[in-house]
Image 1: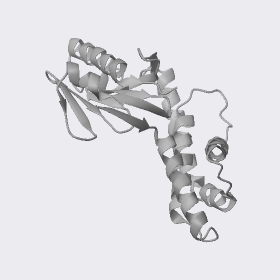
Image 2 (image 1 turned 45 degrees about the vertical axis):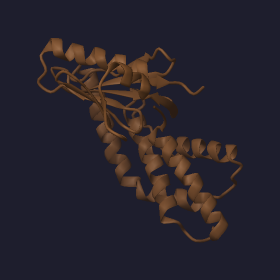
Image 3 (image 1 turned 90 degrees about the vertical axis):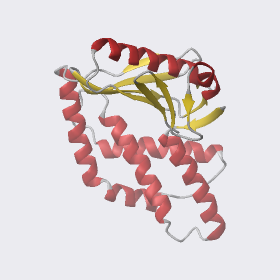
Image 4 (image 1 turned 180 degrees about the horizontal axis):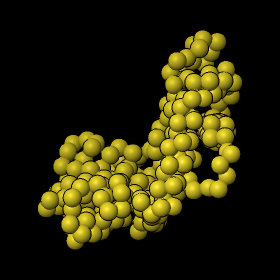
Length: 226
């Protein structure tokens, strides 16, 4: 049982290209709310990623940088699909809609960086799986009160091999989210490839066991498509 999974960015871009092709066949002059919302989500996702990065430049315009990156990646995918459409009016609407949310995200990003500098929260750890897939392990919560662990694959598209998991663990569910139970630990596989486990109020030994099992599950299930 294998599944091709997409990051949020890859999923949104794929949906936008399908909508663009459909609108091109119908009436490209008509403004599409779905396309505008998709582009807005694409930029918001990029802003959230940029806001979490450690950097010294506080003068960076988060919205403009996110829009440049999002537009470039979207344009690259359109070129690969041989799709030539003008989204200038949509990008202008996105910029206007995200002007104030961008300020809020930038402020939250600065608070996050301050917490990291004060060692109140853990750094994200990047690991390469046995099948050459780079993923991050994120500790949710404060360092002295970690509420959960999440494994997040970094490739935009990869394969999730749940057949290998089924051979070694009890895999429950017919579709996402799937669940693997190991004693008191419950790991959840979501359709974007993330694997999560709650660790609230765990003693140290149980927390370490949960972390190691999370790494084992990611190593067994993440497969590169390159």
